[in-house]
Image 1 (cartoon, rainbow, N blue to C red):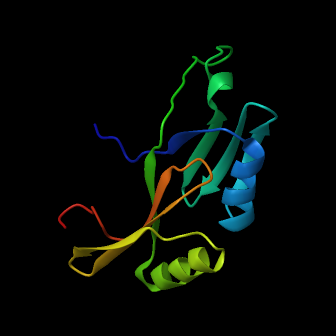
Image 2: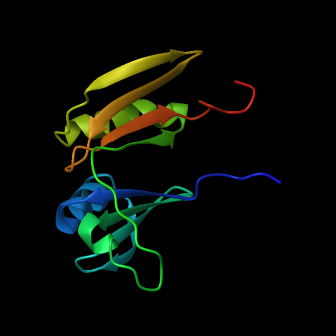
Length: 132
């Protein structure tokens, strides 16, 4: 019995409008669900990025309540051939790249922030694969 992957991850945001403008408008993530003043969900490849207004997520209902705060981190995987194009896209959008890191073995990643200062990373496909 094994876990296949993390299917979804969640960020807590202060503004759904700013969140949508960034993840959909700038990064091009498809919006797959939205509830005004509560959450917006995006497709990120085979994964889902859930973005909640933190206080709204404290309230239970059909699902258990949850809540989080602070600056979180997540990484988006891209093919090695698309890595530089993503780096150029992020820069061309006026989003500051804080750092690029060489992980060795031909793998690079770079870091930048979303409107809520969550640390986002674009990393080359193959990092953390079994056997590497």
